[in-house]
Length: 479
Ligand code: FAD
Ligand code: AMP
Image (cartoon, rainbow, N blue to C red):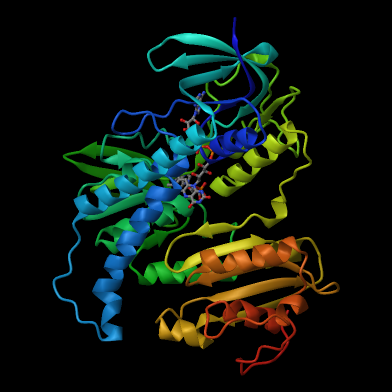
């Protein structure tokens, strides 16, 4: 007889494992199937995020920023450093140790919550049955009252830039270079391309980023995008917009990249190439046609607002469904679905999901950009304030960037907050909380912010929405 579960989750990334834990909290009998095998050949939970995404990329970004500071920024504080060098092997090992701790931690949490971790591949069949194929090839059929599909995403491959082991790599390979490439190419100036390009640029690679579009980070507020582009260029990243890669070839451990730009056909030779042209939903062999699950026109699993698929009792969450490909979005969808299965009312507020680019300076935003509000014909007002005018930023020698607040002209409600600058990834959460509670710019103007603090820049930007910023010489009200 088939083993039966209240909930079978397929995928153990931040969406799937969070759903499994929440369902267990609610007293359900849960199995989580995950097929990931790490570079040591062992099954590991945590998905893309913990193994080859959010966590390892941030580990390398933190290590390399410390190196950059030691080399270039410490002197301003009077700290004299000579002969600072980077042991790349030690940096990669530290990253691996962090990844292992995170993935082991997820395994511990599943165990502690009584979730059955099934190591192998899951496939949804008709009638909410799930075929489980273990890594040794043995199969069994599980019966599920509810199924949560959480199989995540995979890097998009460019046919003209096929991966070549250790030389032309995707995001996973870019976390594994054992030495600093002298010349590094990156295809795609998306968040992943910019973060990974920054890592190696800080260690001395000459990095060229080729981006097909002529706009830099089009989803980001224009002023913020311009400021980030300027900062990254100052750090030495050679970012070429409107540069479309048309072919690559590898010979003698060098990659020749062919691309077209405004001047016609171009060639660039590099030692390593990172292909970072986006991610696609990973739905291969995930469900049979008679399971009843459908895809949308872009290849994502079709779901309604509450992540329900076309099959009652079957849900899909995270990178395999519409919306931003972000770990926290996947997690919140997982928790929501588990609550719905448990008979509770739950929803994700898609208008309040923060996004972050972990470059230096960081970029973070939530809600609508000024361009979006303008295009929608809404009446709005804007406040901005620069980190350069903030005492804490000056003390930290981190004066690049600003906070921008977009508010509704009539109701004063905050519609969006956009930050480029130090600790943007943390400051943005104040905006998320404010927007979740429907705050107006005035609500935030009236709050007391600790001094001296980087968050005062957010406060002053809220004041500037009505031309009231205290530490600003120009008090003219702006649109
Ligand atoms: P995943 O994390 O992709 O997990 C899916 C899991 O399901 C995987 O383990 C996979 O092996 C398994 N699986 C797939 N099919 C099956 C099957 N049939 N049977 C069993 N198992 C299966 N997001 C952020 O929010 N912040 C960041 O800073 C950030 N940085 C990133 C940096 C990089 C380099 C990359 C690549 C991504 C980054 N992301 C970041 C995105 C983030 O990693 C994803 O949005 C997130 O992991 C999606 O979670 P998920 O649970 O939907 O899927
Ligand atoms: P994202 O989807 O945000 O990760 O960004 C990926 C980026 O890669 C997008 O901005 C694409 O425009 C870019 N891109 C895709 N194909 C190519 C190509 N052939 N040459 C250069 N850039 C590309």
